[in-house]
Amino acid sequence: MLEMEARPNAFKTDLCSAPCKAPCTCLMTGICPCCAACYWRKKSLETYGAGMQDYECCQGYISCPCCPFSMFKGTTCGLCLEGMCCDTLSISTTRIFIMDVKSLHPDPVDYQIIRFSNCLQIAACVCSFAAMITQNDACREASQILNIIAECAVRTVEGCMGVQISHEINDTRSSEEVAEASAGGTGGSPPAAITDEQLGRGPANYGSYEEKNVESPRVTIRVPMAQVMNDRED
Image (cartoon, rainbow, N blue to C red):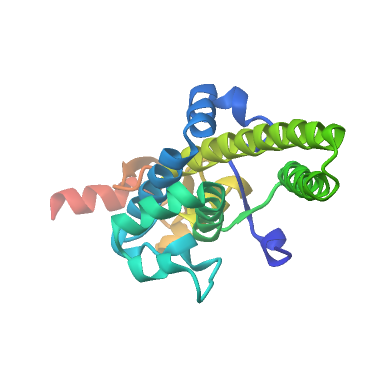
């Protein structure tokens, strides 16, 4: 995670503002996380890879020799099993996969939201164990309430991750183009002007000029009129 901090590009939206940016995507991912996990992984592999033939369980970020899903590498069946059994991990690893492909660095607010959700999960797990051991009704009720809160938090985070994944997939620029746009190198920069000295023609024919537009929409070459007339006569 520390090496991700030095990456040049940022998400198009952070987790905090994701529900307002695409409420329908957030809602559908949170309500149907299993289907969303399969859809976003398949969509990301088709956009940034060779499709389903690049699929592997958790995209290789979480490896376990005992995991039975590893035998379904490159298959739709494996993706469906992963989405049904580990939807939260599946969506999270899809997000990390896109971060690697597009050289995205994590947002500090995203870290805080994910950590808060993880802490709720741990607290709910501890409370459930305590209720099992003590067999206390009050502890059991507290455990159930905390489990509901933790589940709602996880589904909300999943929905927000779905919005982030959707926005990045819809932005088909490469990581280099995103970096240049973020730095102001392209995307609204003025056209570059190439002078006579750069063309090697010297200042002898200064005077009137005619602009020639080349195929690139961002480059305009200024050529001396005398040279243009010579080209036309030839």
